[in-house]
Length: 221
Image (cartoon, rainbow, N blue to C red; front, side, top):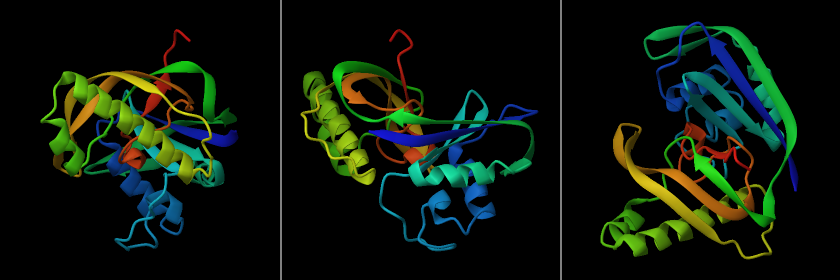
């Protein structure tokens, strides 16, 4: 199926050395009336909206980006009015903006497509991590492939896309240390292949609204 997709790229005088979580917090607070931006039921609430995030925040090569999917496209266009970013102790002045909007294809593909993780993929929760660390290399590989397929299924439910074909995946990733809200986490970088079309810069796995698990199709394709 085709889905509306918009990427807001913010260009600043200085390279942004910070986390997408901080970017998410600043924009979510500045536009607190839009629940979809901060993924809470209302301003100040600790209750989360549990679905695939339609707004995702990235900082790639020091450049802040906000991704809007489906009904979030209009909201991302609205926030393009911001003139600066206050991230922790530093203000970044926005000197240029680029809005890239188009319909993108999403869904089961007839061919296998190869992807690269631009940011760490958070594949494991506490329970699956305990199983993972006890397994040998081949078993870990199979576990991660199964989790990847599960991530795609969960993402599709959030987008109301019904999967009717079998999804098969292979992963070629390595472990990387990372952190989520100050808590050390195990992430994965590398490549994977799957018979599924995922638009560039979308995230898969856990905490994709904070920039984790951002993927892009391999340039050789």
